[in-house]
Amino acid sequence: MINKVNEVKSFGGRQLRFEHQSKVLNCAMQFSVFLPPQAEHQAVPALYWLSGLTCTDENFSSKAGAQRVAAELGIALIIPDTSPRGDEVPDDPDGAYDFGKGAGFYVNATQAPWQQHYQMYDYIVDELPALLEQHLPLTSQRSISGHSMGGHGALVIALRNPERYQSVSAFAPISHPSQCPWGKKALRGYLGEDAQSWAEYDAVQLLQQYKHCPPLLVDQGSADNFLAEQLLPETLAQALQHLPKDAVASLRYQAGYDHSYYFIASFIADHLRFHGQYLNR
Amino acid sequence: MINKVNEVKSFGGRQLRFEHQSKVLNCAMQFSVFLPPQAEHQAVPALYWLSGLTCTDENFSSKAGAQRVAAELGIALIIPDTSPRGDEVPDDPDGAYDFGKGAGFYVNATQAPWQQHYQMYDYIVDELPALLEQHLPLTSQRSISGHSMGGHGALVIALRNPERYQSVSAFAPISHPSQCPWGKKALRGYLGEDAQSWAEYDAVQLLQQYKHCPPLLVDQGSADNFLAEQLLPETLAQALQHLPKDAVASLRYQAGYDHSYYFIASFIADHLRFHGQYLNR
Image (cartoon, rainbow over all chains, first blue to last red; front, side, top):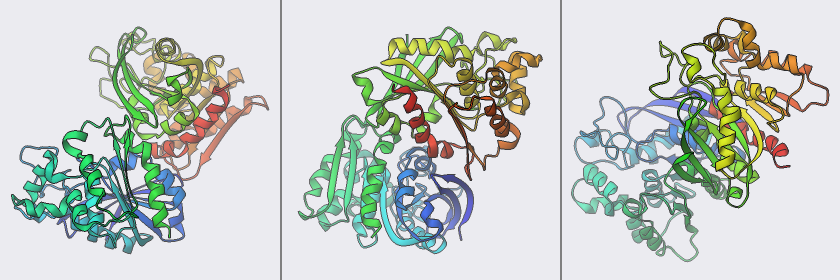
């Protein structure tokens, strides 16, 4: 069951907000969906967008301008929240922005008290697609993208489930979370001290291990304040060398761009057209 | 003097925020500017954008997606705040959203205590262009647009100063403020009880009086909650009949669109291309 809580028209399509009771997360959740005009008379493929720290489903919906090209190409946008929500869900005791609510890091937590609700990996990979492909005019063709923490989520999910995603992209992803402060804090908190368990949520380590992924596009702004300490794109660049020579994989440095939605808005059309090559077959 | 307080790259150009001491408004103000890539080596024309109730310069900057086509066409975007600001500026005693701060209505107030700061008409028409054309790479070619209260401002300012603006457009403007609740409250508060003084801030009355205006484009969503009570587009449609037969003037009803930035984002490219026809000569 999903309940529509808002609908506005956008670029000839429909920008929708839903709420539902998530079994996996054990709480009520909201998410946003853009259905392109083509969805009025046929099922369409979907691009999942995973947002960054502190975001909800509304940041990408209102600031990225993605609806324009999604409407042109006939691609639905699925925009989940970034963590479980609600008074019963535990949050960081110090109210930190980078752990707890708004910072689920797209992992399945194993540590108390987080494991009861913080199961964002299963929510994105299994529960949400099953629910939406049942209730909305969607095919089972999916691609996935995201920003910062959400770029990390998109890469990890696509690398671990290449059969479920036609393509993957990211803006300024946290590429190597087991080696940066944001990632270490989150992985230690949700998964415990054993760094072995972190590897399945680390895009660089997954690339080293699997040497395979769906077609991939990453954009990284060169003026991003988080580049050197948190994002470590050079480790991603190195890991991409493990892919076969005929792999489709680009990491682009965009001179002068920062970490904001102004950066995302500037290149989201490129990402949609990239995914469109693989989704509309 | 204008001081830059923020700069990020956007669509190859620069999204900037400035602060300055406004003589006309008698307070410190912030405004945003988008400079397209062309402005790095030549002066460019400008589109002024006037925002609606409760907005600052940031809503349009982050939500409309206007930078994309502005960068393509080589048009600067000038995005002022919607009222004087600061602790010394009087605000509505009840904290209403539709009067006082965030609701300057682009008039020169004559009534105490408002007249000391609420001089938004002169700020937009005179002070800001003089300041910006001195300090930024702008030609003196200007067009003007806006949303809701800002659509009212854009229409009034262009109708009263046709020699200063190449073209005008609006999204869901308050077309006939002397006949709607938002407008009556604002005009009575800032200008006093004499409704004669309101006429120079009423687009419908100005069209009836002047029978002339720069090339004009207005979009109105048909699912706009404020249409019937506050916006009165039918009165604007009627007033446009006073223009000469060869005037360039379109009022378009857009089926299903509401009053939000999702509506603006869907049609802002049309508006920029419309202004671009007149600005780049």
